[in-house]
Length: 319
Ligand code: GYE
Image 1 (cartoon, helix red, strand yellow):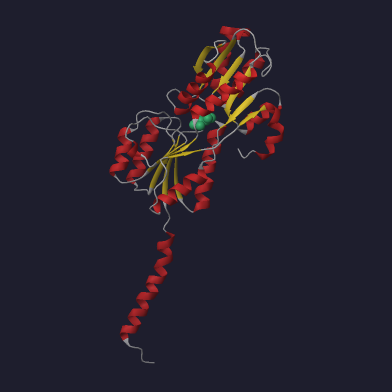
Image 2 (spheres, helix red, strand yellow):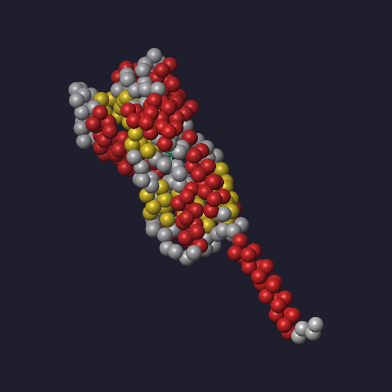
């Protein structure tokens, strides 16, 4: 058969293009994510959510664990910039000190998404969106629950507070929201407040010190997360006291460990803070790549779980 040479060339070009197309279509979006570390049950669930959601969304994830150190997060972000990833996301361990590296990302035209925790920077053009919980509101929920629980209490209500990581958004905001509510009634007194760094070990250690200093004076423990509360419960038991009875205990996150403590009658209430941010993060990454404008703030919806509902809610919990 005599096929004109031009036709053959055109057919070859078309075939080449057709075989290249799927490869082009398959070119995966690359997301660099800098995680804080693995300090709590919340964080573990958050990392799993991000990894699983990236897989489900077909997004290539470069995941870096900073082991609680801001300098490691800055290094990771710089390396993502050098690798020219499509999008950078991170959960900032503390609020301040991000200006320089965020300007570097902006200069490289790589969009940045803040997940879980906010930064304290005036120039909000340095990130496209911030997705996560309203920590001030979580603190208020904890405060409102306590005010209601103690509405008939006569005399002083002495509170000890286990704060999260110094300088972190959830520690600053959860303190603020809680104080805002309890200060309305002078019977509430925060007699000690110290960081337990969001970990069980530190929560236990600091609670031991509180008990040594204040002993039976302590009526309430407000812990900025469940892990610290769980550590503190151990300290309270070792001191011969009954958690949730001798000392009312309030914490935040509502992870499975907290539900177990509530079902065992050792924790009074946990305010929900969802770590399951992976799905909405991947959606945001895809939207960005499709040229859509994202809302500047995406707030997670959450509830509050007192011990009375723990057994009923437990089977439904996903983290
Ligand atoms: O409450 C705590 C974790 O940033 C909301 O960090 C997060 C907090 C969470 O270590 O358990």
